[in-house]
Image 1 (cartoon, rainbow, N blue to C red):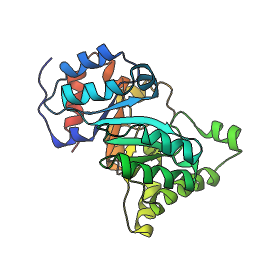
Image 2 (tube, helix red, strand yellow; image 1 turned 60 degrees about the vertical axis):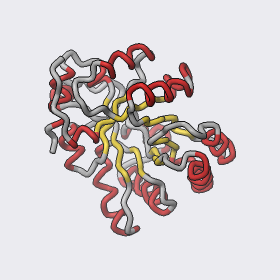
Image 3 (cartoon, rainbow, N blue to C red; image 1 turned 90 degrees about the vertical axis):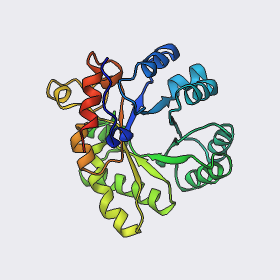
Length: 247
């Protein structure tokens, strides 16, 4: 592969490696076509398979920042103890579900401050695998109810001073006015990212609320979570070059 010139825009890339083995992840990072390494997202699947040693191995071997995407969602005490069990790990980001409620979020933030003081806690809103049909089936939501639910979740994150939120790029426009109201900003991390050519042919996997990297960045995303569009790409160097030129 050709070496892609490193640019600041590559700092915005979070590489989701959930569909890979530990060996495949290491091989990908060894051959990453850029001097600028991505943040590496370890999801529930990989963490359950390889555990904490995977976090430590990738951090020490490649110097990458780790996004531990566990989407913690349980009673407050269980979430707090789960975070306590991660003490000392070099985690840049850790996810919890905002729908766990006020007390769960507060306990999570308190525990993270004590045991993961350098970790940013991100609140997951509603999964990008859900669309309006799912919202209707699960909660009988329609129209404004869906939008109001996102606003309620984002407002709670702002009020409780969660470091950031995870949402599809479609909801980014809802956050700006709420940030002004609360006079603080959130880190905005967006999965549901597909390249324009993939969107045109309907190659969007199991995610339903998707946009291109350009549109997401233009809408205010701080980080783009991208998985198979990179990990399974036959032209990874060109994909990375594309992302490097977003600014």
